[in-house]
Image (cartoon, rainbow, N blue to C red):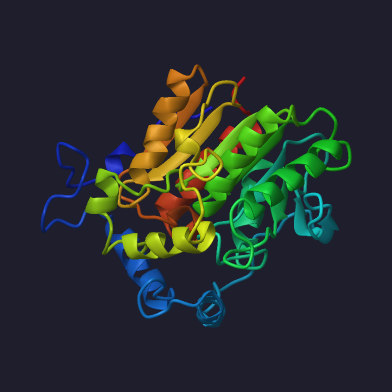
Length: 334
């Protein structure tokens, strides 16, 4: 399992790791891509307040050029959802190499409101290819149409299905991993809590990429990185409002896994970006897991921004982080 990496990316670190006034800590290539993403991303919480309109704007954004990464096979199907809920569409990515492999249930990002199987197709292909794992990408229900805890229950339902079909997915000898980025990292952590509390399925690893883990949104990284680095504090405020609704309990451990009792959870691998509002809660989660006796590795990348791993095909630091993440999945912590 790889350790903490990426420390050399920050060319102008402050003593606290937060930005100095007037200094852009993003690596030059990262700054270019952060600005590109900001230019096409809907201004949610500002000019855009309707989820349907936000999805419409995102759907009009230009797609990545070039052919997607090749994998062994890609299959769309449905799996049982939670009791009383509709079936869940999933997309199963199989590596080219035969033989037993880890099975990864992957929860996409998008603030619980945006995203889906197509938007995350390239990321899932790249992770499948790099890790040699079978990936099950989950099209969970989105807010505000389906608010907390519906997406978390969907994530757990997909995990249950994968755990019952390991023989057909990665093979009987392969471990089961739950993974996700941003809001999907939140859902992956929540699904790990549910798996612990509902006696299964057993998990080898929770792999979280810049996860949202605390509805309080009260950290130094929120204040320091809340604007100018693509994902903003205003975006996150709106996303949480859509997810929780006017009467949602942001303190519930499934909504804010950082506040949960973390004992007995599977090992974790957590990627954080230094120029991300969510940076501090991801790093705090690693510390809290260790304090609870859970093995946890933090891969902190100071010169990067929220979303950089999804740019692995054009951003060298994203490619390096994806490679380390893939290695963690291929050989989960014991």
